[in-house]
Image (cartoon, rainbow, N blue to C red):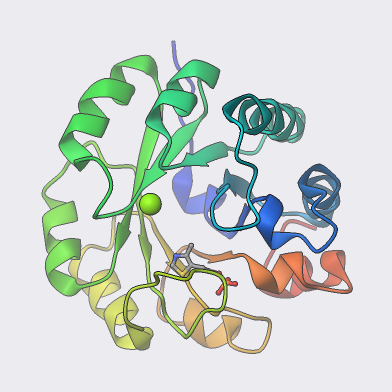
Amino acid sequence: MTKRINWQEALKVYLIGGTQDVVDGNLVTLLSEAIQGGITCFQLREKGPRALEKRADVEELAKECQELCRRASIPFIINDDVALAVKLKADAVHVGQSDRGIIATLNEVKPLGIDVGLSINTLDQFKKALTISELDYVGIGPVFKTQSKADAQPVVGMKLLKEAVQLGPKLPKVAIGGITVDNVAAVKATGVDGVAVISAITMSPRISRTILALGGKS
Ligand code: TZP
Ligand code: MG
């Protein structure tokens, strides 16, 4: 019997991070603090010029992060790397539109009890996602301008969030891109289930306080 994740709950404060996002490069310490602060899930996204390069190092880091998440009973998600998600039996894998086909990913991982999240940047992509019954959640964005992703898609604004909530109320949704403690209330007012952030948490001088302000578990 595989576990069932309540994504509507798990998406509330979704931390994304990799070595490249942490000033001192110590992702594990940052993640422990963020878990203490009340994040509701974590996605390992090791990517970009400052990311770890060796496969063995990424795997080791992933295992450490997975163990911290397991102890805190929050989902551990791997970005893009389906093979690593399968090897570690992550709770979920998150893929983008340009990554390996979503159907191929679902066919490979769902039988193993691994959930799948998909990035959405247009209403057409969202409509298509609604036809894929096995999909577990979508990430919609970038809502605002982001400094954390070099190849980010055009900003979608809050209009797309509102349209998606109206069109597909049941599919769990997390908003992403440029979300901070200052705009989180407006983002949540659209009806999305939660917010996914990198810099708001990784660059915060007061991690716990920031997570609480974003809606984390207290
Ligand atoms: N996908 C769309 S925007 C983004 C990703 C991974 C980066 C979000 O980072 P930040 O710092 O919260 O804007
Ligand atoms: Mg991707």
